[in-house]
Image 1 (tube, rainbow, N blue to C red):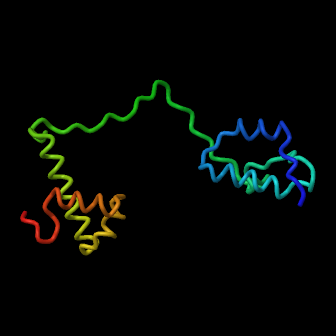
Image 2: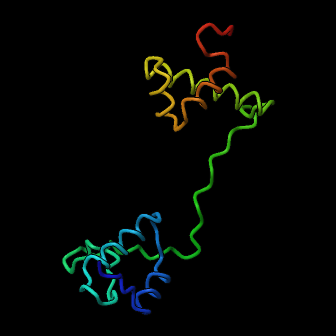
Image 3: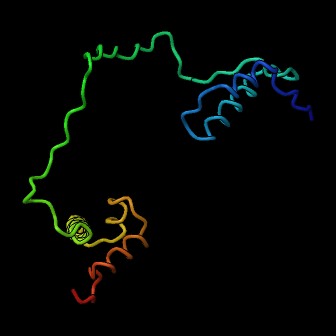
Length: 139
């Protein structure tokens, strides 16, 4: 069995200084690819961060020049008559309405409802219990 001779110092610095937008899996994949492509018994001297890089890849669209002193669009405001007088109760009612609509949409399949709402099954069950929406609960 031959030993791994390692990475050249420049490659180590390049790996360290690269902005890793993905997960640690991305770093592992780049390292594995570099080792696989290296000559046997020689330190890894080159690393390719984007295996799909191509001189034929289209350039990203150019951004429009920002308008002078551009202001973000103002947020729409609720008329004072529509503001809730009890925020916690209004939020709870809205949450219950979302749960009811999601359950109806997914034909009361709790696993599908949880997935659609980005919740775990247990989180959904806790929310359903909180709003007395489980079968057999008194509403």
